[in-house]
Each structure stands twice: as C-alpha cells, then as structure tokens.
Amino acid sequence: MTINERALSSRRSMLACMSATLTGTALIASCGGEAEPTKPPAAPTAAPKAEPTKAPGAASAPTTAAAASGVVAITGPFEGEAKTLTGAGATFPAALYSKYFNEYNNLTKVKVNYQSIGSGGGIKAISDQTADFGATDSPMTDTQLKEAKGGEILHIPMALGAVVATYNIPGLATAKLKFSGETLAAIFLGTITKWNDPKLAADNPGVKLPAEDIVSIHRSDGSGTTFVFTDYLSAVSSEWKTKVGASTTVNWPGGVGGKGNEGVAGEVKQTPFSIGYVELIYAVQNKLGVGSIKNKAGQFVEPNLTSVTAAAAMAASKVAPDLRVSIVEQDGPTTYPISSFTWLLVYKQMTDASKATALTRLLWWGTHEAQKFNSDLSYAPLPAEIVTKAEAMIKSITGAGKPAFPGK
Image 1 (cartoon, one colour):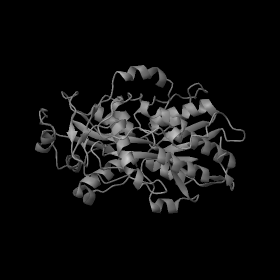
Image 2 (image 1 turned 90 degrees about the vertical axis):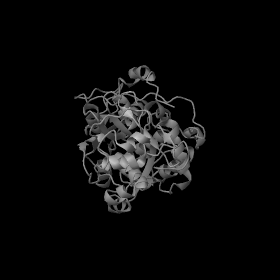
Image 3 (image 1 turned 120 degrees about the horizontal axis):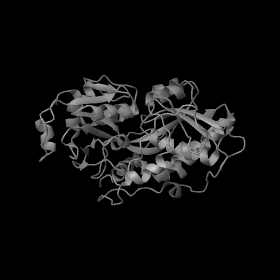
Image 4 (image 1 turned 45 degrees about the horizontal axis):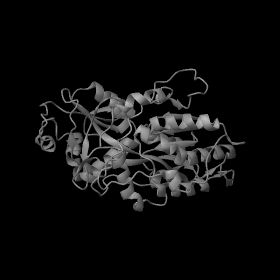
C-alpha cells in the first residue's frame, strides 16, 4: 500500500485555512475565527489518505468513538468553562493538532493556543505549570513524573504515527529504498558512510546506489521523535543501545542537527545525499523519499495507516494502566516497526475549575469525535480499548476538588 499523491491536491483547499507555526511560536485555531496580529507560517499540508486495501494479516482500522462508550458527545459551548487553553510540546502531531484545535474552536468557541516546541519542551511546560497541557511522543519517566510541581500527571493518547527514514538522493527521487534496523543504526553511528555500502546494496537489490558520502541529520532539540527513533535503534542494535541509547536527547556520534520535525525535513531537502528521521507527514509534504523498514518478522514494511495500526493492535494487550508504552519493533508480518502513540499531558488535580472543565471536554472530544480527522493527515486513530482507558482517565480529573468533566 503506497501513499496516494493524487489525493494531495483535493485536500489543499481544506487545509488552506490551517495556520500552524512549527518553529516554536503559537499554533492557534484560527480558521473562521479572529485574525491573529502576525501570520505564522503554514502547517504542513495534509498527507494523502492511505489506500483502502489492507495488507494480509493486518489489523483493521478501529472505529474508536463507536467502539468505546459512544454515548457522550461534545456538541457546543458549555457555560462556565474557560474560553482559552494553552499547550506546548511535540512537533510530531502539530499538523494534526492544528486541525483539531481549529475544529474545536468552531464547535465550542474555546481557543487553544499551542506552541510546537518539541516533546522536551512540552514535558517541561506541564512540569513547571507554565501551560494548561503538554504534548509528547515520549512518555515521561518515573523521575520526571515525581519531580512535576502540580502532582499526578496523566498521559492521554491522541493518535498514532510513524517515524520514517527520509532521504534525498539526486537521481533516485522515485526509488523506494529499504533499510534494516542494523543498517540504519550503522548509518547514524557513522560506521556506514557511503550510499553504495554493501549492506545498503544488499537491502536494495537492483537499485544503483551512488558512491557518495552519507550526510546524517538528526534533531537538535529535545524530541519525542528522537526518543521513538532511538528507542527503535536500541531495540534492534546492541551497539547503538550500548554507545548511544534511547532518549529525547542523545549524544549523536556525528551528523547535522535540525530543530523540530520541520527543521530536519528542511535540512534533508536542501542537502543532497542526506538521510534523517521525521514524522511521516513532513516527508510527504517535502516530497522526500520514505524508506521501508525491516520489521521483527523480517518483512520490509512501508509506513502507512495499516502498518501503524497493526503495531498498535499487537501492543494493545501490553499497555500499562497509565498508558505509557513503547510500540516499536512489534511482532507480526505487517507491523511498521517505528510506530508510536502521541499523548497530551495533563494534571489529574487542577486548581482552576473553569479550565479543568474546558480541558476535559477538549480531551473527550479529541479521543472521540476528532479521531475522524486522523487518517486524512496520515495519523492512525486510537484503538477502541485505548479510548476506553482514556475515558476513565479523563473522568478522574478534578477541578478545585470536584469532578471536572461535565459529561457533555
């Protein structure tokens, strides 16, 4: 199953009104709303919708809202809720959150101001209580949770996405390269330095790879995307695990840094013979090559809705009650091995009742009605069993000591 490029033009009119800043300034729901005093750069154009054909043995895409309780629906404004919420964090889901927050503003008149500053920034913002919510693709550690200033923090999943190996090889723009985990690790360790290395050639029979130096590009900021990518490399390469490890920031053996998913994609686009890692939509938007990755079953799998959903389905039974989980390198012939949840981070006990009401309604809508927007932006919807667990978390949130979610 491949990305349908023809679908891109049909979505541009829908996405023309999306204003998302992906360089660290506010991403504000603004379509149909008040004009902002300064116009930020546009968010990435929506990635084309995946083809409906399902790979053999793949999990079916879940119907989340219907499969969960499906009773409560957010249908409009609610008296007494705050009219503005602030959030900060991951660039991985920034394009999706631009759509979410615009649609939610139209529905409820609640404006959500979101700064896409990276998962590390999102964890710091919620921990320091400088935002109403954080956003991350890397679950907070036990130590980070313990050190947070405002008490217990909940991880509310919003979507699933794919971190992809993206490359720029002049003359091979249409080639669909394949990478094993060991080969990817060796590239970023600096032990594979040429595109025509025998190990790369073995993964790509019939492709005439150039005898050019590889330029590796990585994130320079604290990043959930980096955590997902290095978590995967640690799972498939003992050398990577020992020398570098998995974290939102690591000591890269070499290469060039870029800020945010958009920064890495931009560096790859302007640097011939380079390779980097980004969330899928950023590679598609920049018309860069996207590699197929060898999974645990030995199959080279493309990143798409079916393969990401298959990874989530394989991991569903292993998810901890707090929903902090890594789903890289799952079993199954159709799973994409560099898949991840992305979460919003919220305090379980909030002191501002009006903000607690507004935030719980946003979270409920995001895990239910908003899931219909995921696939058009190349994110997979949440499995039904995850939605059910998220519902219980949302209902547990309090504002000024009282249950915050009003049930509508």
